[in-house]
Image (tube, rainbow, N blue to C red; front, side, top):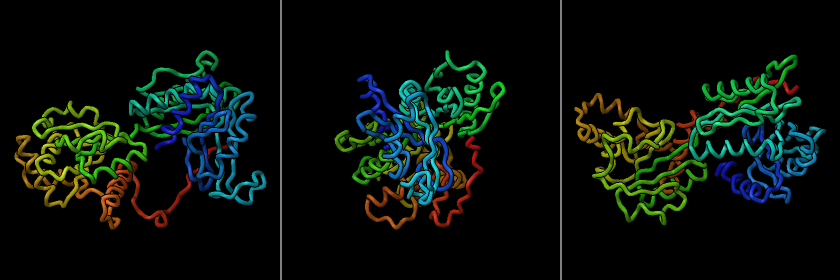
Length: 383
């Protein structure tokens, strides 16, 4: 589960009780760090916590100091995990420095509302936040899931305009931004946190081997829907963790009606594990009938079988399905689905599939980390 999925239940409980809380957000890191900017943790007065800002070495310290640090306003606090850093004797973690924005309910609540809206709508969101000066904690949002900006009455008009424009820029570029801008006669640091749409996994097939795939995907916080033509397999009892479970008899698979798959986003993944040639062919035809395939389409089984599935899909769509056309389609697929990790059991095969989906959706190299050359980008001034 994601930080947000862990945070939201506690947040709703605290909001219903009208209880104060502190939200901690990683806004910058120097050197090695287990968590990256955007990681969040919610801290209740009674000591309860949800979410994380490190691998376990900072949470207690952040929670202990959060309340007195935020007595007057939000603050960005420096935490070190460098063993010999004299400022923080507890530092013994990854060997880096983490900067955490601490804020209370007044500024944190609108942020959590926007994050929740984007999460459930599965839409991208960009959040521009002031990280220093008198207006620290002021922010603006950009994204179709939300229609409001925070603190509009108290934030100076010039700053609010800058915040909004920077949020829109982050959304358009689909990337986070951290820079100093001139507001009046002084510089102000603004961080735009770009939050990509929640990934979706459309799993076609509800056999026993689909269960570990669903479990792993939900552990990653993905939206998961399971569909199968066999009603005795596609049941909520068999897939309690899935967001949606549906029965789709072969004759009802949409083919020329892409609107039936309207919730399948371009950034999602579709994996075919039905073990049924007829089902796979009609599902593939439905995917090919859309205006572009989703970001990842995986098919279980050897390429020979997938070629046959594509040929049948072409026939169902009334296309000629020439060998050249079949090969062009095949090049867009992950067939066989999964990475080569020596998988043999259903759980290991599920891991190989989820790993490849994760790699494809995030443009990872899929190389061992010891072979990946780490290049640290230039860090902004912490002034």
